[in-house]
Image 1 (tube, rainbow, N blue to C red):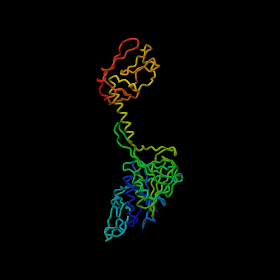
Image 2: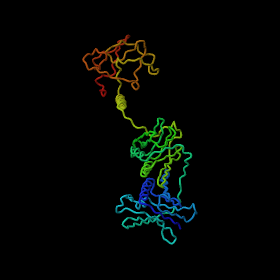
Image 3: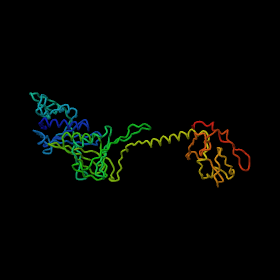
Image 4: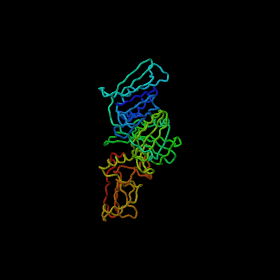
Length: 429
């Protein structure tokens, strides 16, 4: 038969409420471990990536504390598990009222009913209020074997410390839908806390849009900062927020200890007989200075980029419209010397023809004996329009081919007809 009973002040009972709220962010159940000199609440989340241990000192935190385990001798312990919601229904908020108004408690008495002659085991909590009112709660618990996460601070060379009030101001900037937190120490005397969520796509549908929020803090604002420059370590944003919010209720400093990515990280803080330790799983890269943050880069939209994309899509659409008809010839003002494609023409190509300024055909470049058609899939082309009535301008205008003369070669009067009438071309303008 175990003997466990202790008494809490209203302020200590209010602190138990706050720590239960924090543990509720990690899981639905809380394990209790009672030893002769201390009382510990522990929680492990469902993914086993976060472990929390909040220890209450028997002599300092309680006004009265007695624990005699049924077995184990001086190192014996009593362990059990309970639902957090059941405990929160007892340790409600506002248990501590400095003004002592009606409804406030004077003390809280807790005992464990574990006797062989009793049909059921109970965790009994009595709230002794002013005006002589006593509220008694009997909660059912389950006997379990509590295990603890081990963390060696001697190998955790990277450490930093900051007051929880200042850290709470920084986490207000984190997005509500962000999932991961990347902590990195830069070489410019600043530490960056970057919260982000990765984009998840299912085929063509985007399920999550990437969101990145970065908060840069000068290392001089830390109480202690000794972290390898360029080292990225990634933890859960939800766990970090729960830890900072609880630390802020105690108005104490938050300390972090870690060595390398994929190795555990531990947050520690406490005061007045309450010691809180959270051991979290981390991810990241072993290479410190050369580590690249695996978060998606913030999207930057510019007018120039949008204009370029629109122009490219317009060119692609125009090319698809011209795929079912021969392309128009290149204006004479854009003639360039082209490289011959050996497989496109035979050696029996026509001789250079006389240049007709009104012809739709491109004349031969001086000093070239052969010509080849323009590669419209690769070449860049433009259309120059002349809105004036002056047809003798530098840039030729497009006119109906019926009014144009035909081109004749030097050796024969054989006429070469135009490729197509301009009036028959549709879709280009």
